[in-house]
Amino acid sequence: MKVYRIRHGERIFYATLEGGHFKSLATGRPETIPVPVAECTILPVVVPSKVVCVGLNYKAHAAELDMKVPDEPMIFLKPPSAVIGNNDAIIIPSASKQVDYEGELAVVMGQTTKNVMPQDIGPMIFGYTCANDVTARDFQRKDTLFTRAKGFDTFAPIGPCIETDIDVSGMGIRTIVNDKVRQEGTIADMQHNPQELVSYISHHMTLNPGDVILTGTPPGIGTLNSGDVVEVEIEGIGKLSNPVVDDDSLKTPVQ
Image 1: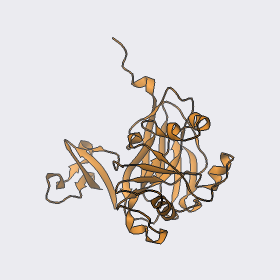
Image 2: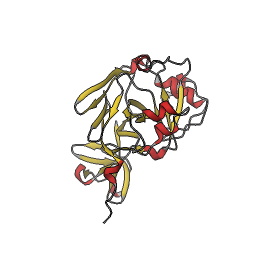
Image 3: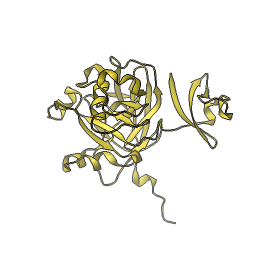
């Protein structure tokens, strides 16, 4: 089932898409009446307490960075303020000279998860979605930690929906910039699969419902420029699309 987070008027709710209408998953409420897609805004799929990311989880990506795949998952955090949804703009900060895309599979947690073994992770996961681990690469090279490079506002596009009933183990993933495929791989290429990653992270921090885990990017990373449109497409889930703009283009001229 593909689940969307929707705004219709003043109401925000989760819904499925059926024949050009969104139908709420809630019962006994006004929004259970199907509403046309044109009247709705698709929001970021969740409002997470944290976004946990995994670096160097594809051998070919590590090779293109001239780095080794670590024996244990390399994890870091993005702030929730970085999260945006489908069709929202990625803003290139004026402080950075190189902002890169990194298409990724994202895990959305459904239950509080702490110290859970990989074989028991399945029921803890609500579903999967597409994500883009946008990165200010020049800051990443400069800093010891990834906080600045990964944490700018709009640097965590997630969506467009959560697929709750899918085996992602063999699914294909690709990133497309201006209609050209830039990244392509399969989830099977991961060094650590999603269940192993969630288990590992749960032994270091409690994962709450709605938390998001970005599972790493395949090879082919590259730079984004203002005017680009970047899409992350995962087989069986859908396509996350975001335009790219400079932060200068959002400033209101002084009158």
